[in-house]
Amino acid sequence: MADLRIDFAGIKSPNPFWLASAPPTNSGAQIHRAFEAGWGGAVWKTIGAPVLNVSNRYGAWHYGRQRMLAINNIELISDRPIEINLREITELKRTWPDRAVIVSAMVESKPEAWHDIVRQIEDTGADGIELNYGCPHGMSERGMGSAIGQVPEYCEQITRWVMEVASIPVIMKLTPNITNIVLPARAGVAAGANALSLINTINSIVGVDLETLELTPSIGAKGGHGGYAGPAVKPIALNMLASLCTDEIVANSGLPISGMGGITTWQDAAQFLLLGASSLQVCTAVMHYGYRLIEDLCDGLSNWMDAKGFATIADVTGKSLNRVSEFKDLDLSYRAVARIDHDKCIKCNLCYVACNDSAHQCIDLVSPNGEIAAPMAYDVRSNGKQDAIHTRPQPVVRDEDCVGCRLCYNVCPVDDCIEMVELPSGRESVTWSEISQQNSAVTEDWEEMKKYREQVGIHIH
Image (tube, rainbow, N blue to C red; front, side, top):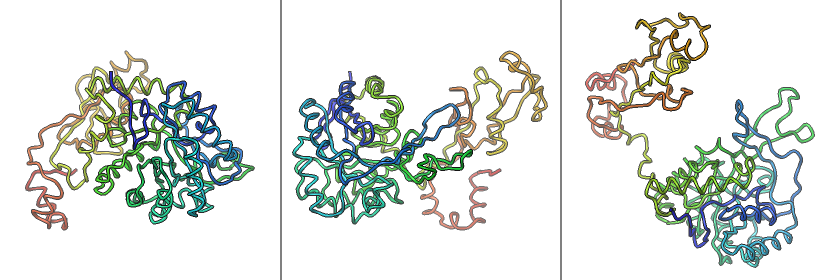
């Protein structure tokens, strides 16, 4: 059975799953229940400057019948007095010595303020400190949160202040509300941080109520931007994680990275590990499904690791990073085409519509007697599985015209009905970088590009 224990910058926990700093880690009583459920650690909801919260606080983005694909949060850091938080952290760590307890902190940009909060946190017996440079709302208007995270020089300066007095591991949490996530990460490396974490929430307005015309959430008929999180942000988080783990300075620093941003399932967790994370933080999924989620996360990840032959979390971390490539280094001669499994096809023709209207018009509708049917030439009133299968035309891909865009695969509602298969292109493997080096005129002049295509047999339609 796979060993899920981790040692993250000296912070140990029985599994890689930590609750992220957020509403699920607002009090000792909550985290106590989470640890009973099996969570390996928790990052305490950010403590620091005095705040007052508003009501409502959470908006959400739903799509169809799927609820809360993303959440928009305008709740600020902890609104409970700091001494209460510190007392509960102390009690929690005494009760759960084997679990990771990290405290998120955010105070004004003065060295004495940071020195003071670090010392208070260390007195609780906490295992680590996470510097919140990410919250994009409220606190940023006061010069904290993402107002710091968006300026690498500020990140470096404040982290240096923290490292002057810290004796426990310090994790620098990054904001995604920046053009290049690598720059603040490098600032963390330069300042001597012990680890990095990402991503914090993304600046967003989640929607407008079409009945009242008010923003969501509405606070007395007014609203504003907030932090966007949940399953919808996972692709952004994965990209930023990979950017750090493939950056020469950040990767060579050896700093471990705690990954977060839309982790809901064990499959999500495995993907974050494969792209370089060595601990994992979860928030929105817990706000949706509760602490019991940890059972599925641990069981699923453990079973997958066993099936793949991974004995430890360290064995998984970064295993897919060698597959991250820039476009200029991709093989332009690689060829894939769509294959439709006619036994699984329900003839909804969504692949045909998508290809015909939005892609490369390489799917035909073929009638039961083998003739190409015109769109809507069949009886659209046919319904029910047997009727549809026997009367509707079958979508068929023309290999010679398919460019392998994968749109049909993405829209098909039936699992494994469409797959992308590799076919020989008849061309030598070549990248854009190689073409540029061998004949730069091809990459700079359309006429030369036309000649090149004719020479190697590339037909654009």
